[in-house]
Structure formats: C-alpha cells, structure tokens
Amino acid sequence: MDILHSALLALHIFGLAAIVGTFLVQMRANEGFRTGLILGGAITQLVTGIALVGLAEAGDHDLNMLKITTKLIIAILVLAAAIAAVVAQRRGGRVKPWFHSAGGLAIVNVLVAVFWH
Ligand code: HEM
Image 1 (cartoon, protein in one colour):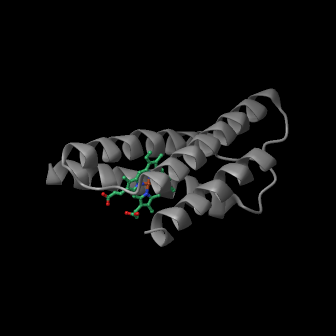
Image 2: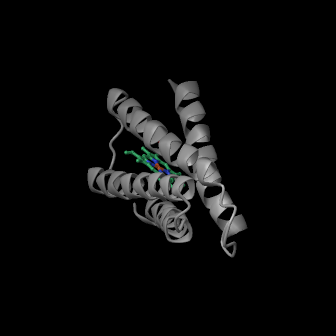
C-alpha cells in the first residue's frame, strides 16, 4: 500500500507541475499556449487525487472531507478551464483567459492543499 501511495502522490505532484509549470512559463505569452499540457495535468490531478482518497479510505486514514470536497470542486473548475482553452485554441478563439483561469485555480488548490489542515 505504501509504494502505491508514494507512486500516486508522485504522479499527483507531476500533474501539478504540468499545470502550474506551464502556466508560470507562459504567463506573459499571448499565443502558442501549451493547452494540451494543462489538460493532461488537470486530468492527472483528478484521477490521482480521487485514487489517493480511495486509498486513504481503504487504509482507514482520516481525511478532512471538507478540504477534499473543496479541492475536488476547484480541480473540476481547472479541468473545465483547460478544456475551454483547448477548444478555444482549435477554433481560433481567445485562449488566454481560460489558460490563466486554469493556472490560477491550480495555484489556489496548492494553497488549499498545503495551508488547510
Ligand atoms: C489542480 C488540482 C490539485 C492540486 C494542485 C493538488 C495539490 C496537492 C498537493 C500540493 C498535495 C501535497 C500536499 C498535501 O499532502 O496536502 C496534494 C495532496 C493530496 N491531494 Fe491534491 N491537488 C489537486 C487535486 C486533488 C483532488 C481532485 C483530490 C481528490 C478529490 C486530491 C486529493 C489529495 C489527497 C488525498 C492528498 C494527500 C496525499 C497524502 O499525503 O496522502 N487532490 N494535492
């Protein structure tokens, strides 16, 4: 169980890096947004986050469900913004507002994860 938990947590951190890293690198850009990376990261966060919750429940670890629900809602918003960014890019629309929403909300989720005990 321990190795599975560590592997999931590592993937969770890689997913976070894909979103926040891409956002920070392209924060001042106006075109050429790497929306696929943001989308991949958002999907990774949802999948690994839910798996981490399942593992904690199976192992009888207590989780703060209000915190987890808050993270889940924010992660769904991140995913929605990432999808909107990909769609806008395909259609030649404005990508930047969606790109910034996804990156900004992911940063909010990092703060929720770290500061809320
Ligand atoms: C953009 C989305 C997300 C970001 C940026 C994020 C960020 C983080 C970070 C930085 C940690 C490590 C610090 C800590 O242990 O609290 C963490 C851990 C965790 N996250 Fe997330 N998270 C996201 C989405 C989710 C979702 C959707 C869920 C579940 C519904 C979730 C569940 C968890 C759990 C259970 C842990 C604790 C792992 C452990 O130490 O056992 N996360 N997350």
